[in-house]
Image (cartoon, rainbow, N blue to C red):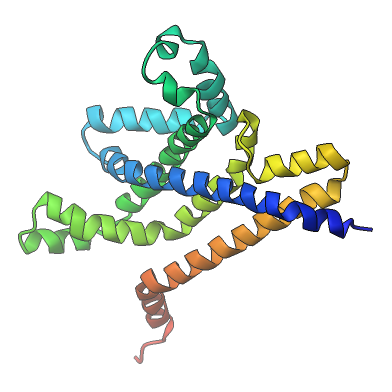
Length: 239
């Protein structure tokens, strides 16, 4: 039988942990989104000196586990005397900052590749039409390329957002009291698996369900022109 009174008494702690999880997720995604916009433009640049470093960065970050990156930032940088004796130590001794930085670095790499792929998939006709009316390269990026690419990237980016939300579970490894840390504390204090980790699983499921719903609404709004095109293409034309 489930210990319902224990679950009920633990809910305030779980809600506090959820606040930490959401704050970390939103802060990391916001910074990663802005950085990825700039890096994705560099990633698709025909100039090797511009696209090369970005490609190397995304390759390295996507090729290593997020937990390893978190440990390097939180535990590794603390061993560097230069950092310990610099003004940056105020930031790097904070578990919150280190977790945020690790998530930003990670999501920026993945989001850059998502946006870069969407930019490369822009129909050439859109660019030719923009140049034919005299738009500059900057105007083309701001008015044509980026808006169009961001709309196409929505389905993939939604997976990245949900992935980062789930990945915040490892923040407890550097002492942050997030949802997973609360579940571990409940288990350590009461030795109940279902009541602790089952409850946190429900929290993550509800958050995931909410995010999926929000992105479905966004896709329905921003990608409705694609549904219209596909519907029109499916209608047989008279001979």
